[in-house]
Structure formats: structure tokens, C-alpha cells
Amino acid sequence: MSRVCQITGKRAMIGNHVSHSKRRVKRKFDVNLFDKKFWLPEEDRWVTLRISAAGLRTINKIGIEAALKKAVNSGLIV
Image (tube, rainbow, N blue to C red; front, side):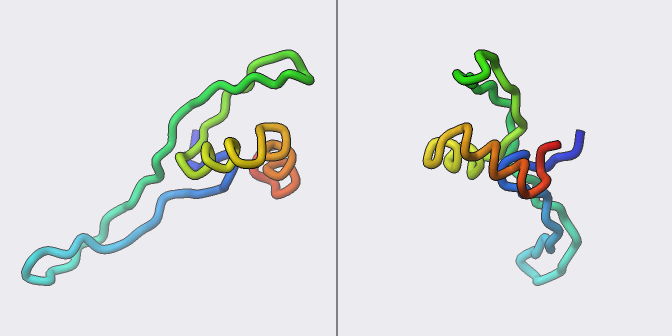
């Protein structure tokens, strides 16, 4: 499974690790992902999503049904 948020679509970024002497080495900034179960009352079942902290805030703001509908429309969830 790739490390992509299923709600927001956030993925890892590439950047530089800069030392005190300004030497630059490539590094990877991973996303803060975790697996979380949500209850869908209209379908009467649990759904497990791999979401970021920003995705969790989005679900808290607009609701799980609206967030899932938005993710399906944008192609993040099949």
C-alpha cells in the first residue's frame, strides 16, 4: 500500500537535509499517516481508511459521508 492519504491525497515530498555548513543531501518528508476506523451509520458498517492528520481534521469538519463522497469524486478512493 502506498503512503498516500485517502481523503486529501497528500503524499511524501522530497527535499534537502541541510547541515550547519550548508551541505545539502536529499531526503524524504513522509506524511503523518495512520489507519483509522470510521462508522458509517447509513450503511451500518465500519470503514478503515489510511488518512493523514489533515484528513482527520477534514472529516471532523465536514463529516465522514461528505469526505468520502469528495474523495471518490476526485479519484482518491475507487
